[in-house]
Amino acid sequence: MMRTFFLADAWMQVKLAFVFLLVLYHLKCHQIFKQLQHNEVKHTSNNMRLFNEVPTLILFAVVFLAVLKNAVNWIYGTIGIIVFALLLMMGYKIYKRIREHKKKP
Image (cartoon, rainbow, N blue to C red; front, side):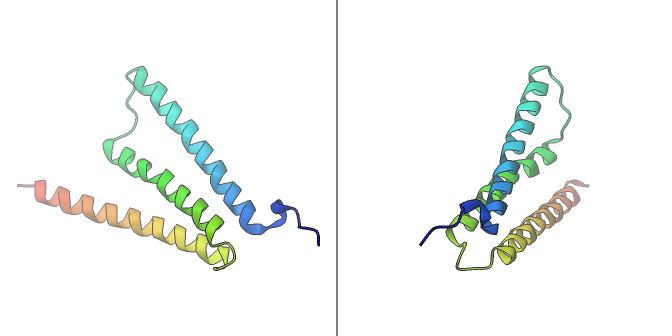
């Protein structure tokens, strides 16, 4: 019995897409690093805090797809990761509003 080519599996294509996003993230980090070396601050601390969560979500997605590829439909898993990211961003925005509200005299 001959094994099919691993790129023919849809979960592998999605996983490689997430790995490609991780490479893009690292390139963006290098760009920000170069800007900071020239004392160019183009992002707020809040933006950088959210930006810091991106690799965590991507790496979680890669591991999820590799480990649970046959146990759970990868489409539902990918949608779940996107929903989780959106919930994380909404939680951050709510926290930010609460924090700003407490600062006001």
